[in-house]
Image (cartoon, rainbow, N blue to C red):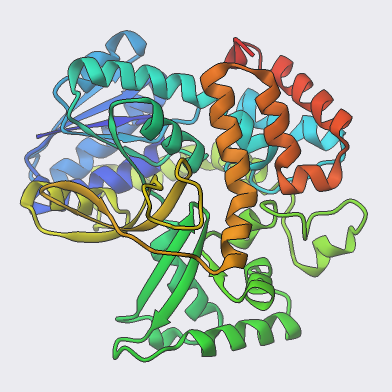
Length: 438
């Protein structure tokens, strides 16, 4: 069995996912192909993963690195599973552009990787790379399962599922973390063990529809009441999602710093006091990037620990899905798939996040039915942006980019149409070769 990791220079994530593989008995003797275009980061990942292989896996896996586009087909050839974690354009120049140009126009952001103007730009510069991956996979491993972890999840996964022949599933750890985060935040830690939850919607805006304890008793209403009370009495890091509970009746999968920019409620130049009131960390993603770059050398040394690095299997979905397919043992998870009648009141070409199970037949998504109307409406404000960004990528028509930005709830609540179009034009020009054709 062969597993190819695209974007292996994402060392910490590669360590977690491939370390999980090497901790899974059914997968331990696999061939692992590491691919990246950054020689230094690729070498660092290889060193770390080979140390894990030696220390937890008795070196049963074979690990080979492949550098550069010219070696990509070799990395992919005969792969049974492909994991994608690329970030096109990196912090510099692209993330800097994604934040600084909108800021000139008065548009402030927190993370900028999922929707909004920065999510649109990130998606448009990544899709050509994913199309090239798909072309190579169709040539050298057409039956592979492509597991996408790269954001913007809905835009990228939706494009792959609609416009390539590669079997694709989008994966995000916010689904499995969501109920635990809510329960711990409201002082119900004793209910975390053995809880059951039902979640559906779209990536980063999936809705916690039900929550029960290990005995099947509903604990959601109690948790929601405590969340609202907490927002009334103290400042904390999850205030946006707790406001979702107050106004829309449900908790959401992704963090408050993400969701603060997915709507037109919280980040408003006209009402700067909302930033303080809801504890919203503007420019959070650039800060994280700067800190990670600054601290990477020390982190690398701590990871290696003189070659004694070890690993325990994490909660990331990838290794469990691969194990389920290989052993034909069903595994339940939240996955991103095209809406083939799964959520009745969302569009058929939307990429939705629904309960799925993996087994020897591959990925099997579940029918959800209708979301509560207010939740479907919230999802649609983001789906509009996703679908128009995909249309822009497919056609290279700049008008679709304008329309995607114009229909983004945060962007449109802050800027006029003329400002939006001028901002898009300036960002396309600044991104240069990453946006060829627009």
